Length: 498
Image (cartoon, rainbow, N blue to C red):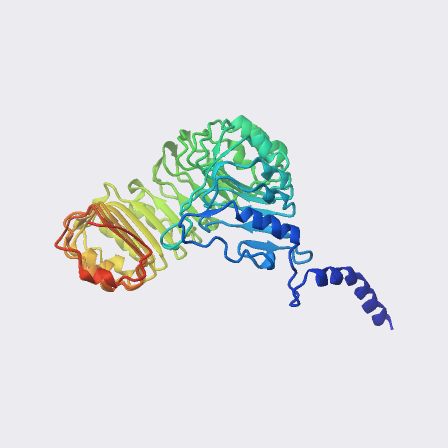
């Protein structure tokens, strides 16, 4: 009997929800969005135009259909209210978002990154008081990820007034404005505004916003910060209070004209996963004993004045996935101190004047069997036989810049049958490319730019049926363009064939 009472009580509790569901359901228990929100979205659609005149803009956005099923839209499962609008990388362009957008008060996530927006950020965004995440950033989409992506659209935005923009966004947890020209660029202006109005912010990403330092101490109150990206701004020096944020896991401070000594306290952060100090040539420091090295995923130190002292935490970088280093770090004693980097997926190395050690360094690289992306800069392979590169069977992306490439290494590149992206820039090629190309049947993107001694253009390029991007320019190829190029029916992007 008691069980019947509980069942009846549960039914009565659920009755209002069932009534709402039946009013907005399509019969398959999928809630329909509210008509006024659908109308607002259709009005917003009218403010977009496509970069290609033949392209169809948001084809699923049709009047009379359920907007909860439209591309880029997510609705609340209980009430059918639009909570997420994500149009990142759809190839859309706009000179001004329709104000109808700002009536969607239920929005919690708004993402227009790489959407081709131009002009001033609409101040109406400040009306979306329930926003948890706001992304208006511009960041480059890798051809390796998708050579056909429409995401090469970049926002060209400036904010009207930082304080007005964020004053009502008290619920905001994530703010991505990379590439936005921030008019209130002084550290005091934007720092005070964030500290006052967005007290629970967890992610702050303002890369390339033309910020001018110093960073204001008011930011020290944002103890919830987990990720900070202030790269490509003149916003130094580094405030030591960043090291007091207990949950900080990502610190990106590249190309900020940082000077002096990097505080050692940052290496004590137990939750640190990403550390990027690259392209700060006047920033000094020691690579110390990492007490929490086993938690680090990304380490970028190229273009700094750090010393190459051997870390004492040998073999502790077991989760490291991305590593970028300068030639001055590249002694075998130093590299071996990282231990077995079984998790490493991305490696970027500028060998510069380290030619005398190249053989052993390449042997070390050849042992990184799980590597998927390798970038080598300023390297002379004439000093060694780099057969170890052929061991990298998991490699998907290979970039070489200003390298001297004899015939043996060209042959080894041809053994990388899983390769999807190959870029050779300002290189000297000794021998035909044919042996390098004909096996690379999975290649999707091929770039050869400003290379010397290339020989003839291999006809085998025409048999790489998966190629979507092909650019050969400013290179010393002899003879004519092979007729087999006409076989590349999947090409979506191509440059000069010169």
